[in-house]
Figure 1 (tube, rainbow over the protein chains, first blue to last red):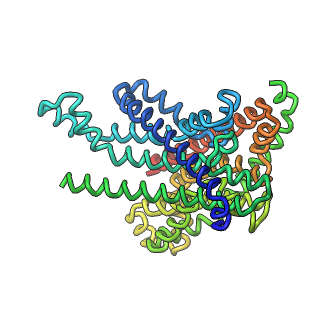
Figure 2: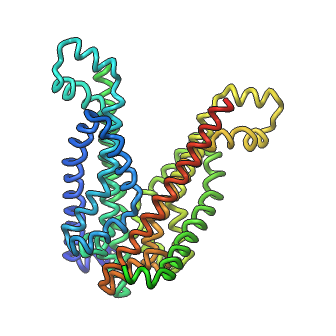
Figure 3: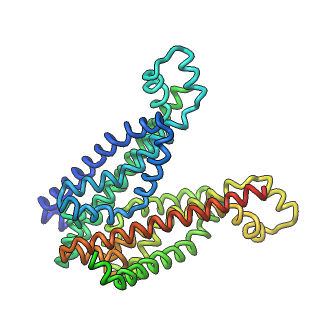
Length: 211
Length: 209
């Protein structure tokens, strides 16, 4: 594996860059959509049940199916891959944002209102900070899912480390296949460990702030 | 729609192969995961190691696991099963352990007082009480396995992923969509039916309690 990477550094680096780019853009899109949408759903509870039912179905759709469904709609390449990965990561964060905000103790919100907090203040100073650990757990799940599923973007021409695996398979180039597989496995584990570390730090700080 | 209508038998065969992959993968995963889950509930140190290893396996992307197994196990049905089992272990072990730990100590004391032995208590009291949580784990596992089994076509294990990959190589959109839609429908159907089983079990337990 190391031998193949040192013999083909540029191919490897391009694949890794593409992978991070795909996952990064999709995760940014998930954050931009899921956070405000989750907040909006807590304000329109009637609408929320229907939205959550749809999101629960979306969550069940296999990653490969979601990616290849893009082929007839958007063709091959970067954009369809990012759209599919965004849809794939969305449910985890949307559900956690909604649950995190709904689980905030109603008494605390009531007390804040009693002290004269405006709606916006209740949201930014009470609800969001208290829901943050649950929201962040959603970001972590979405990030790991997206980095993992981005491997399959190679099947619709989206590039990334999965391409080393598919190309290695097609050309019987096993060192390349293994290099891609090990790299993407380590990347997914690194993302999981890094986000878990941040999550632990945040929970600890929140607990210290509360006491 | 014409390809789908003319080739419904090919879709059905692929669907059957897919169900076999998931069924065999789940059966082996349960055979390994149940005892490991029971052991994890009893020994926290063991639980830590088992959950760490199975958690790492769960995080590795499916395509990478399949690729890494090729040099050791080659292509086909059984290497795919190894990967499917690897994916299932975390959730099954975790849910069996959680389900057992959530049982009230009073119930266990009562069972001990009634003279239940360790094994009889496990099979007659603990596992039935933990069943809803275990079924919840099986539900997540099955949905994950339906998804991972799609990618198994990459190592010639058959299943619905085969229809998708054929469609991609032949640049034949309808075939790709047909494969993707049937896979999604299978995942949604499994999720919904196991959710109902779980709800019914919980309702029954609440009634008897």
